[in-house]
Length: 242
Image (cartoon, rainbow, N blue to C red; front, side):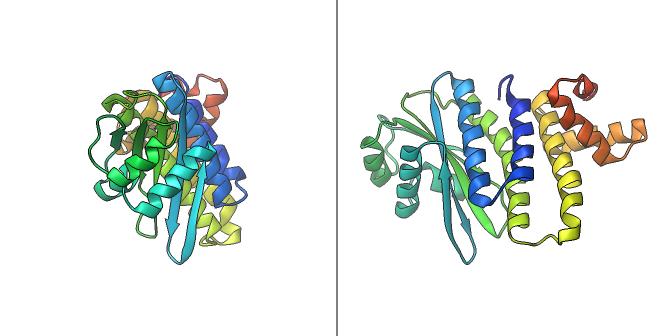
């Protein structure tokens, strides 16, 4: 999302490596997401998320207290753009002055400083569900183009969160944890970086990584780590053109 998109993917990589718990990871994801969309639309945007997992209480985090409160109210109502996005699998936008859907949530929204909302689902598989809820005091900022850019960001954010959930759930053995962090996370994040650079799909980005691995006669995870490391200021990433 804009010129800072590649740095955002690098920060997501760091979040997983350094997280203390899932709430900490969610807080980091919403902060990065809010900053990224703020850059994209040119005005302040806040972000909140509620994570639902089997046999566990819901976990809420956000970049702003009012955003978290409104997100929590939407979860209680079970009605709003975020919950709708989880059902449809597509971004949902609410413009306070013109929207006729979600009347209960619109009443809650009217009591806040926000005037428009964008809900974008995260693909977390069958054992968890969440959607990023973006809030703006302005109207007309969550255009179709912005929604598409946010979807690209959430693909990588979901990868980071899925891995974080596996780590938090102790599904990875201790002796495999370091290798999983170095290999899988690097490959997932490198794929996201290439997607952002070339505006291609995840499958196309992985093909670019795999072809580079073959051409250089290097292991896939080594090539992926080079891509992620290149965010620090090298020209390594410029080799990955479709």
